[in-house]
Length: 288
Ligand code: NAD
Image (cartoon, rainbow, N blue to C red):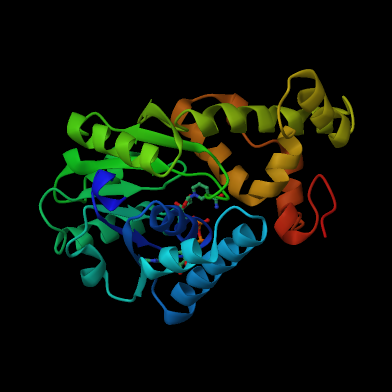
């Protein structure tokens, strides 16, 4: 199987919500994966989540015990960035959403990665070109934007900045196909394709709640039943986290100069009260 893959060795940096999922789907596809985090506890928690996902898959008949063992056998935890970078064909970062952290990481990885290694970022909103400026060769940098939970969500948004080479874009498409994702190709503009549409809809839905147009449930139902969305914009905002979306909205309003992305007063009040959605137990819905 491995010989059909576009390359062999992948390093995933950050073993949290996204990183563990990216490592999982890569190992399931046959890649040798090194998974890095800053502490043993964090990297082990990532591995435990992968094992848990795989066990649930076996219980549902979506794989065998042998598949699970083989996938785990291809995953190596690491606390050394040098070890993760050395010999890697593709490095994917899923560390916190801060430009300074991502730039520092790519600069350090660049000291150890072999020539030709592709540097990918899972950023949801930061400029790929800005992150790429810290890497040894910006033509080998692009965005691989996965969605949560990674092993379920089919979309992979491949984001190229003006300097990303055609060969790197082609390799990213081949990687996406090898892990069974549906890929879209998007230019490095704020919000890419996903957040630019999704956050705009979410902000307008919140303004509609504030205006008393309808209840949150009925606004969501309007989109689910009237427009065939699988989930309403307010429930989705609860799942993502109101605080996370507020930050993205502020960023997009500023970068695109479009007030449609400006977080409404109701959203700011809810965040100030700690009503962050699913993770806090209360958002537009009550959770747990
Ligand atoms: P997370 O907080 O769950 O995981 C981040 C991990 O990075 C943690 O395990 C942490 O220990 C580790 N880390 C922190 N600083 C580090 C450093 N300097 N070097 C290496 N590791 C470090 O975050 P997440 O939700 O997985 O998000 C990661 C990235 O993915 C962000 O850029 C985020 O915007 C993006 N993203 C998130 C989602 C989502 O739904 N959560 C979806 C798409 C993209």
